[in-house]
Image (cartoon, rainbow, N blue to C red; front, side, top):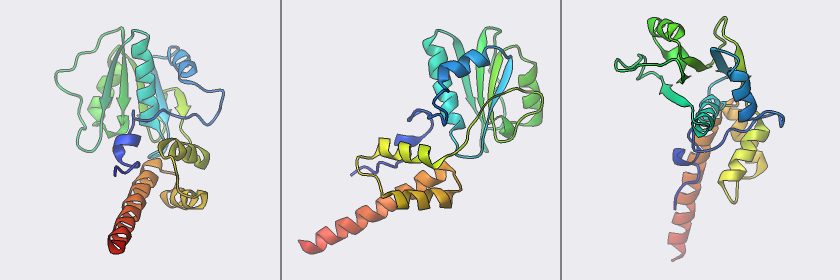
Length: 192
């Protein structure tokens, strides 16, 4: 049996971003982003910044725009040497804060439009959107992923322990599902 909380099912790009305000949409954000050369998506760890950025990428590509997505983390902290940017390109930079300082400066001077994800706002860069983790969104995601989700009280406890970090909460749900399946398999084995 496949664990429905495996990263295959909830990693950035595997699920859509859910806005906390019904009036917000990817299209509305893109219209706003077109007003700026740089803008940023700001939010805490595990709040959906990467998911939103990938939703923006899909929409831009669907509209025929030239888009390049770069993801930076502890293992990848430098801009690739072979990269070339053009004026008519939108560059999506996931994990801007992970970049070495000189590479951050390089990006700021290239002519491509930039949309960044950051945990803390970058000075003098307009904020496109602030991701705000909410239990209602977490519950909605879980119900979308699983036909029979855990009880609401379990979901609330997992969410609270994660401090609103959806990624951490999904890891815990994965572990709970694995443990539950092992217990169920063991009980079935004893009945045979």
